[in-house]
Length: 306
Image (cartoon, rainbow, N blue to C red; front, side, top):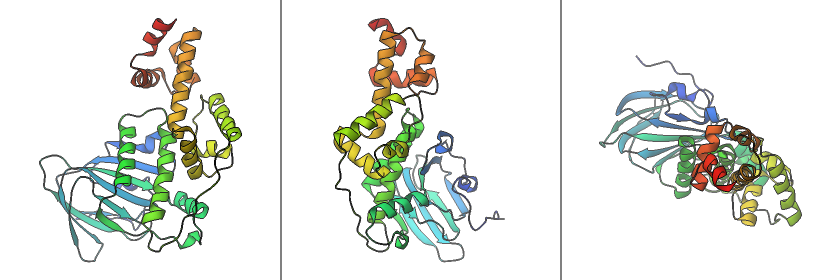
């Protein structure tokens, strides 16, 4: 007997309808604008029904090969043979849909699920489109490849599996990139996107850098950084990288590590105090990221430089 499924549910509750629990989820990470989950899928699923969600759904096969059939509930089946790198795009809203699939490979099937917040896409459309942003309608696509989507998706997966300190800031930047990419290439009608010809001035960059350095102990967001100089988050992230050669999350992480290095050399603060002062949630996270960046632990770094 099939489980009763509502017509729609929230993006956060969506995972309760999956056949297995996610092995990783961004819900615990508190990311804004995007929800990311990683699943090890069962070998065979005879039938499963998913409710509609209010956000854009992107699903990529990250491992394995399978035969998949899908349909809106009560309609005809469509059959796909899908493999690593294939994506499925489902617009927000709509109707419940049914899936059944069978693995064709010896390795387990793994999937990456990315939900992009609809409000974020609407704000991006309002800021970037020449026409009426309310006319933006995304298309439904199945079993397609997209190298940029894959690059962003795998980066988000890596961040979930081995989180760095700038994960939230990176996730916000990635969500902005996804929103603009969807607007540019996956609309049902063509609209032109305007681009900012304005750059970041030296004075504006100085203001942003001063804010970052004075706020390293805080959970910095792309929205907060862009507000310092009155840019949209998307334009800020793009122009910041053009100006500095680094993305905002890379820059913030570098500043955190540099400040930690200085504190390790010049003070007698214990490692936990240093970790908190530069924005790490705990000493173990600080130690892991520090060693990943510099090849040695904070304790050893202090011993060698004091």
